[in-house]
Image (cartoon, rainbow, N blue to C red; front, side, top):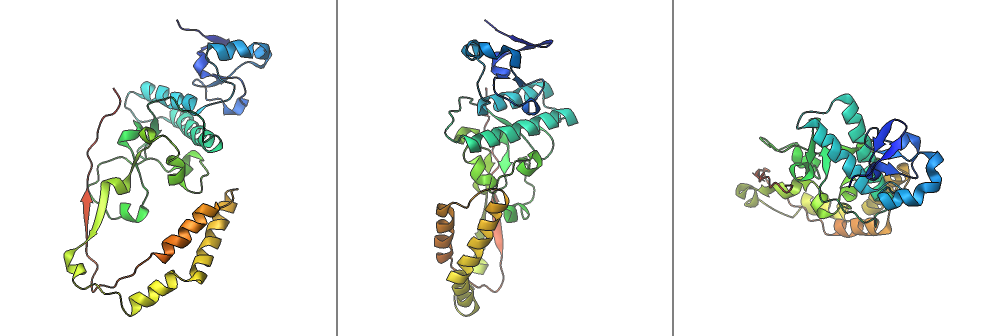
Length: 262
């Protein structure tokens, strides 16, 4: 049985209705605020399937509905605006309520090409330096979340807050670099290499780097977690520097796609 709310002249599913939602946060025609004048019936509305506050599942539903409407074509400006707004809402909700239970088993996100794709087809660029050096890579990349006004200090950390099945594939899981054997044969850790290693693992360098990270967090309205700063200091102490006559690398590219949605 399908139940609907009447909002103005619109028939709206309960799953698309939020009791406590600002007017500007609606994503018409996919997500609506319940009429204020019907506030006394909010218990009934929630019983029928509406939510008191917007959820990750509802934003995922918005993106899924847009995907079905597109039928594989590129997004037009209005669809892109709605999709980007849903992406911002999804990740903002995820960041504010990291323990919120997520029931959806599928998620569609925008690609750099302007399409809306299932996450298992998308690649998140978790190593920009690697992306610049690969060729003939035929997998679509996830759009830069900053284009969706997602103000995360670290996009990768935010994406990893999603359930594993709803995360795009990390680039470093598909593409691996290996130092060529010719470079291995001339490797050394003495002289300049040792001096550079000493500088990178010094307390002064760690202090300067953590200060920059604190400033970046502060610029986005956050406080740098102590665990993050401690981890950086530990990783700096583990750095090893080697010198070679000529750097030669090989890139291994794995691009198999596994369809996870029926």
